[in-house]
Image (cartoon, rainbow, N blue to C red; front, side, top):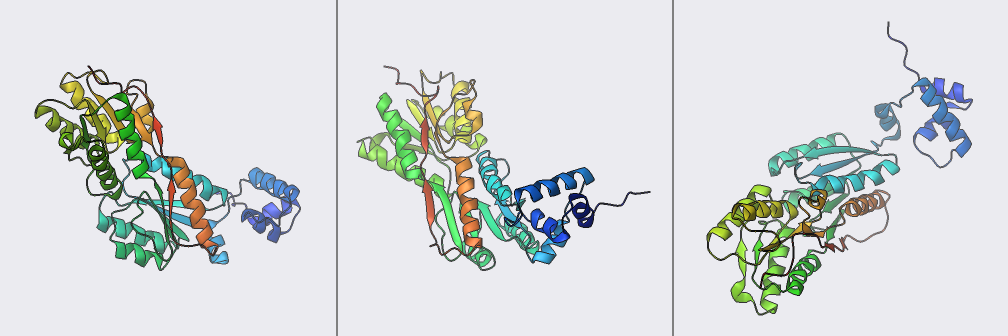
Length: 336
C-alpha cells in the first residue's frame, strides 16, 4: 500500500506556521523571515515534501519557467553559456526547460512552439537558425534574449555577444607580434560570428600589406570541417606559417591535419582558435585561443531577460562583452 504524500498542510503543522506562510516560503517571497523559512525548510525536508509545480503555476498564473533553445547540442561553448544562464535562473527560483533544433530551422520552430505551450515566461536562444520574422513573432508572446547573434534586436528582443571584431584583431596581432606574415584562415560559413571573423582577418591582412598572402579555406565550425579544410590547404603547396581557425573545434581538426602532414606544432606551423573551450586547455592540446566569457554571457542574458519580464523600462540593445587572448602552446615565432 502506497504511503500518503505529505502536503503543504503537513509542512505547516510541523513547522508551526500557517499554510499561507509555507506557500510564500516555497515561492521565495522576501516577506518570510529567515527563522520561519528555516523552520519550513526543515519541516519539508523531514517530511520529504515536494511542492506541486503544476498546481502552483495554476494558482499564480505563472509557470516560473524559462525556455532555453540550444541551436546544437554538440557545440561545447553552448553548455557553458547554459550553465551561466541556469545559475541566474535557479537563483530566482525559476526552472529551466531546454530544447534543441539541432541546426534544423523547422525542428527548431516546432521545439520553441512546445516551450510556448508550457507557458514559459521568457526565452533564451543560444544561437539559432530561425528566420528573423519567426523570432519577431515569438517576441510578440514572450521576451527573448539571443546569445552569440546580434543581427536581430527589436521590441522584446535583446542580444548578448562577444566583440568578435576585437577578438579577431587580437588573434591577428598575436600572430603578427610573433613575426608571422603568411597567415591562412579556416572560415566558419555563413553564421554571423564566422562572417565577422573572416571579414576582420581580410582587413587585418590588407592593413599589414599582406593582401597577396591572404588565404581563406572554407570550413563549417566543426572538427571534420577544420580537418578537411586544412588537408586541402596543405595539399596545395607550401604551407603557411600560421593558421587562424574560426573556432576552437575546427582548430582541433586543423591540428590533426597538420600532424598527418608531418608538421610540428608550433615550430613548423602555429595555430590559433576562437572560443576558449575547456578541451583546448588540456596539456596534450594546449590550444592558443581567443576566449569568449561564456559563463558570463549566459548570466548576463538571463539577468537581462528577468529585467524584461519585470517590465523594466530598458531599450532593445545588443550587449557586447570583451574576449581574452589565452596564449598556450600552439603558437610560436615562425621558423627562420
